[in-house]
Image (cartoon, rainbow, N blue to C red):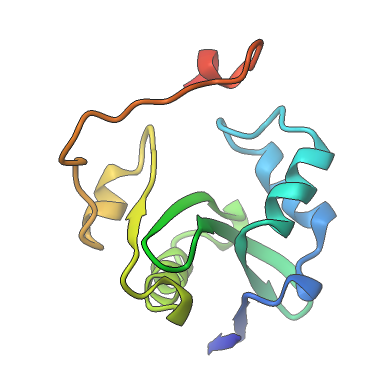
Amino acid sequence: MDWKHDEFTLTDDQNRIDLEEVCNLLRGTYWAEKRAREAIRKSVRHSLSFAILHGKKLVGFARVITDRATVGYLCDFVIASKFRARGLGRWMLAQILDHPDLQGCRIDLFTRDAQEFYHGFGFGPHLFTSMVRYPDGDGERNSQ
């Protein structure tokens, strides 16, 4: 599926998502700066992935891990710094939440610093205690 907004295109077509550009965007984040290229490749392939394209250049990315029936986990939501403050994040999130494959799904997310942004879309604290299990030796646990 494709959506248009001015000179930008949002797509969920994995064939149009440039893996190297996704890796470059994610390396600039606190949560994925050390994530291996192969892990990024597998995560994009096995998720409902979204890319904002400016021409053919990827300038935004997000993915939802989902069963497409009951639950989704929104993650890796990032806009290239040069393209921030243009409303692209809000536009992308609105399209993601309206995606036909996510209707009826509870959407979870974790964020260290963007609560206000997500709150505007109806996100709030989980009703129950959130728990997590990290793989042995996973450095992400220490960077959160």
